[in-house]
Image (cartoon, rainbow, N blue to C red; front, side, top):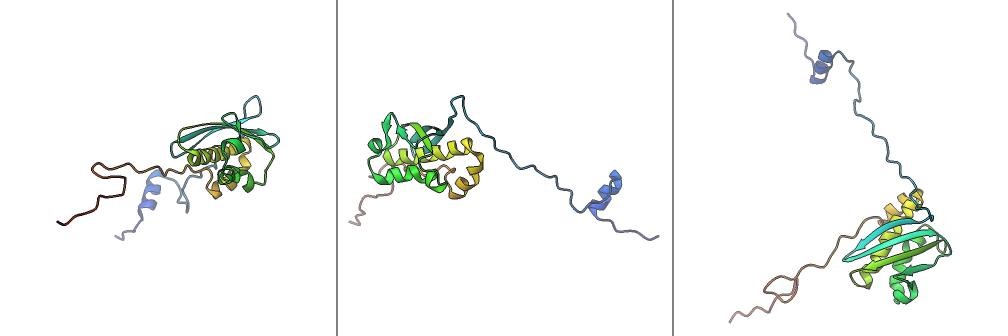
Length: 167
C-alpha cells in the first residue's frame, strides 16, 4: 500500500470536487466617487481643526471667499492665514475659479483657517471627484487631529512643572 501525500488545499478541493487554482482571492472593485452638488450647483462639506468647525460651500465663480459674512481679507487679516486657505486652489491651479462661502465657529484664527482649508478640500472633491487623488496625496483631506494637551492637576500647565527644591 502506497500512501499519497496531499496538501490541505488539495484535500479541501478534493472533498469539494473543485479544481485547484493558483489564485482564489476575491477581486474587490475600486470605489467610484460621484459628483455631489445641490440644486444651486454648490458642493457642501465640513472641515475641522483643533476646536474650530467650518461649514463650507464651494461653487464655480469669480474667486470670492466669504467667511462669516465678511470678506476673507477682513476676517483673516494675516497673510499667512489667507495663504493656508488658498493652498487647495494653488495645488489644483484653480485660483479665481471658485466662490467660497463658509461659516466658522470655535477655536482661534489659526484653527479656523485650518478648518476652512480642510472644508474647501473636501468640498472640491465632491464638486470634482477627479481632484481627489491630488488633494489626498497633499494631505489636505486628512483631519489634523492635534489638539491642545490638557493641564495636569498640581502643575502650572500641561508640561511645565514647579521648580524642585531639595531642601
